[in-house]
Amino acid sequence: MHSTKRSDQAHARQRRIAVRLYQAGQSVKRIVQKLKRSRSWVYKWIAYRLQHPWTRFRSGSRAPHHHPNQTPGVVTRRALRVRQRLVRHTSPAVRFAGVGARTIQREYRKRYGRPPSLSTLGRILKRNHCVTQTKKRKRYRPHPSAEYPNAVQATDIITRWIQGGTVVQAFHTVDVYSNDVASTIHAHKAAGDARQHLLETWKTLGIPDLAQFDNESAFSGGRYARRISQVVRLCLYFGIPVLFTPIDEADYNWPAETFNALWAQQFWNRHHFSRRGDVSRVQRSFLDWYRTDYVAPRQFDAPARLRRGYRIRRLPAHWAAQVPDPLPICVGQIQAVRRVDDAGYVRFLNEPIRIGKRYAGRYVWLTLDTGHQQLTIWYQPCAEADWRQLKVCDYPLEETVLPVPKKFARLHM
Image (spheres, rainbow, N blue to C red):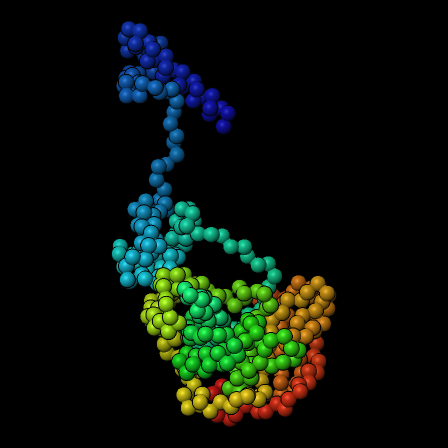
């Protein structure tokens, strides 16, 4: 590196001397003999000095101006132009659309033809400071498998206010496999509203093999120990196992949280409502767009197309009308993923369960079999490892446990 710099300085000095000798009146032939250079070389730097009066005669960079794998500037400009259009949301076609790489790729294809890859668009967005970096979680958390529609349905609630103080409670249930959504609007988020939402969801979206909830009191049943909520009873009555996510870890329920963020940004923030009834009316248009046009993160197609070809078991309306109130406890499974605290305990159905300090900071899977009234605790070190059974203990319930009605049990065969 040092020798290259010295040689460049020597060359610059020769070029400077050649030009100064010519300006002093010496002939080109004399300069060539003195510097032992060609005539073309002398003429070259004389002409260069006329074009660049302030030059220092140093060699320019030899780095290539183009790279065979470099993204063309026109592609970068088009991608950023598409993103700016999506951000403005001036066109009805992109009224609810996002601004991520997948949406940009789809809109790029419509406007310009063949689009760049998702990885290329990601680099363009990152290079132009259009994305934010998220911190990854280190500890492994087990998740239920969702390999077909309605294998797992994740439910969550998002609260908003209309001008004047009117509360809007939006219940969202997301099919984890296809990201299809059922959404209902309520005035409250009590157990009765959650029950009504689930019945409407199962009539439209279909009956799941596993229902996933966060630890909202409308789902978990409040603060009393071993209390089984009406939502859990409803799921067990239809033969649906229940899974509660880790406490205070909303990102575990990422399918529902992702839709909540999309709903808030693309739907709620772009409309002004004066009555709660108007929300459901406009939301139908949003959900139609979402099912047919939106491609969610980690997906390759829209929800409606991902569900094609699969058998969807929907709840008949007359069965929903025959659900008893209050509901009994039926045979089934109540599950939860919990992080073990520093003292070696987790909370399940609002009471502490001892796991052991050696598992502090790790995640365990608890399964309550209501038929046998037994609680089993499992641990999986990583996704590739086998499950370990840590303990089995009796878990008596105060009420009589009934079998699942046969017509509902047959839905899961």
